[in-house]
Image (tube, one colour):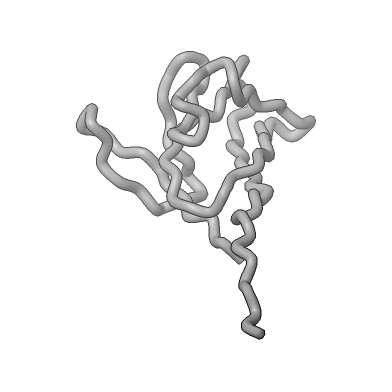
Length: 98
């Protein structure tokens, strides 16, 4: 009798994003994981002026940026960048499978 391996689906992982911007009125996390939709990942500001959002992502590579008061900003805490189709840069993260 042979053992049959069951293929398990990759599990989503918690990924925390943050941006220090105490004077901002609104910060939105935008990326290819949410189709760059400004209505999906609004961030919340804590008492120290740090905007935070935790999301669940499947393993893979994702590009993202912050939309701060309608201006694009990159993540100063992440030096991993790649060119986007507009000639500027996006940050990217790689979510591991384990």
